[in-house]
Amino acid sequence: MSTLDELPPDQRAALSLLLGQRKSYGELAGVLGISERAVHDRAHAALAVLAPRQARAVPAGRREEIGDYLLGQQRGVAERMATRTYLAADEPARAWAQELAAKLAPLASGALPSVPAAAAISSDTPVGRPNGAPGRLSASPLPSSRLGGALLLGGIVAAIVVAVILLSGGGGSSHAKSAGTSSSAASTSGKTSTTGPKVAQRLTLKSPAAGGSAIALVEILSEGGKRAFYMAAEHLPPSKGFYYAIWLYNSPSSFEALSRSPTVTSNEKLAGGALLPSNAGSFHEMLVTRETAGKPARPGPIVLSGPFSLGG
Image (cartoon, rainbow, N blue to C red; front, side, top):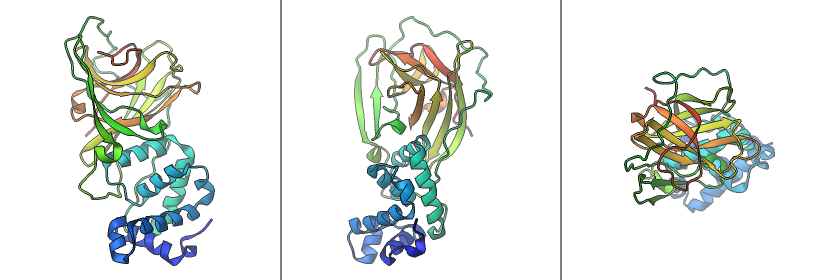
């Protein structure tokens, strides 16, 4: 395992300027008179040898993503939130990022982007519900409703695509409007950030069934005026012939679809997150439901539920 002092001078200089002066790859390329790719390659070559044992357990594409995250080179809020979600869900990646952060800290002029801890779920976590006991969802047809959200829980897929899904219930038409990849869906004006998302709120979802063991911990993340959620759930039945969906909910006529999860396997766990819509603060409950319809007009049978708040 190498130390900073053992790095070749050009690699150490690249890290020092990127972290100490908070420069982008492009800005540093102009200063050094080399290509932007050359700056990138020097920095990432240094990262690869600072913690090689942990690096071998992380796919090459993910190593590049994590390196860009720690060096403050991800421009979009969605990119940074997606990487944070991945780190929280993947232990080898998290271990490598933590080792790198410890090695890089002496070069940084400020705090490095935070490496999230694995979500800890405890069945003893207290949880309350608005208005007492949960009510039944109405099975009657609903008036046409617009449901918006982000598609795909990014912590358990290789690439995150942030999209906006527009669904209409009550016999209305449905269509989807893509917002592109996560790097373009919430990109800023070229500025980078090294602070990363902040945890604004922690919520707990529990099974409404008597004796149900399913449980989820939800973190509400905030950065640059945008919010996202990260969910870690366990004791969920494998999703065979159905899928799990996440919703914000007020009443049978007031709800919003957030995301559709990938398949839950025999490990009975679900982990990942997505961006929250701008009107999320108007909802008071979060649901995880079982769904069989490709575009559900309203939430299906509730698997997990709990009070929702953006905090502050």
